[in-house]
Length: 127
Image (cartoon, one colour):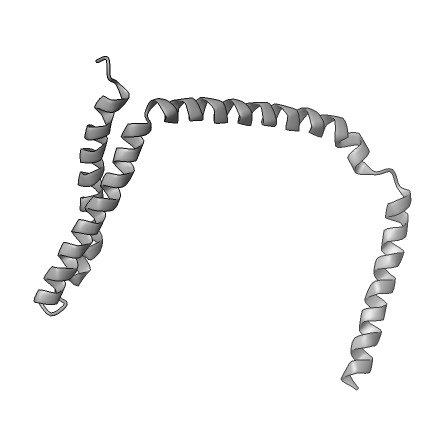
């Protein structure tokens, strides 16, 4: 009995959609009115995105050693901080384990500062 009800309900839904879609298909397409406006907008957005990518790439290229030092320093410092906190947690029977997150964050910050300080002179050799 369920299958017959489901099939008839599905047929009714499709018939309703077909009846509702027929007048909409005959009406003027709303995209034809907006097509010119949208193409102008997309051209402007594309130009802005290209400009941002080029300027961002140039900025990243000029500071590539600093960015690499920040990234690698953060990874190394976070690993050292988390390892130290886990070791302290093992030594204290788990009492120090809640300090793992803050220790990793502090290690990341200190490592990033050190790595950025080492990479900065490589980006500015004439200073």
